[in-house]
Length: 113
Image (cartoon, rainbow, N blue to C red; front, top):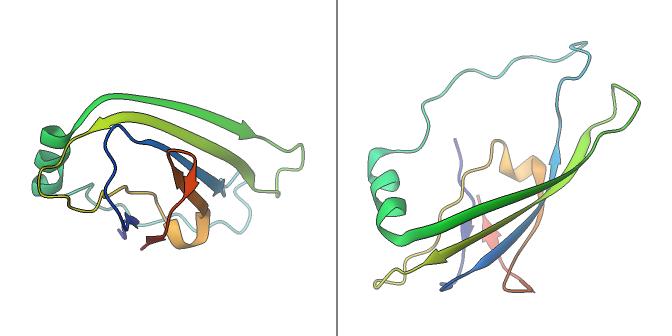
């Protein structure tokens, strides 16, 4: 599964990711994704060592039409301390198709899959 990377380091970052979540509301024409294993053990250990006080807030817009994608935003607040200044790795399913914008501490940031 691809992971978007933020291209700079942040301490105590506030992250906002505007997402378009395409949920198979009606099931018509939807091909289920193959199940994949989550993040690597190494990434999980890095996150445990560098992230703290994690809080999430979601805002979703669910349209009446079942064939219209659900859209929304995610605000993730956390403390981040990485002495090596590595990129922060966030994992979103199908990020290239679903993530529209990422900002940190009120500023848009460059991210990649």
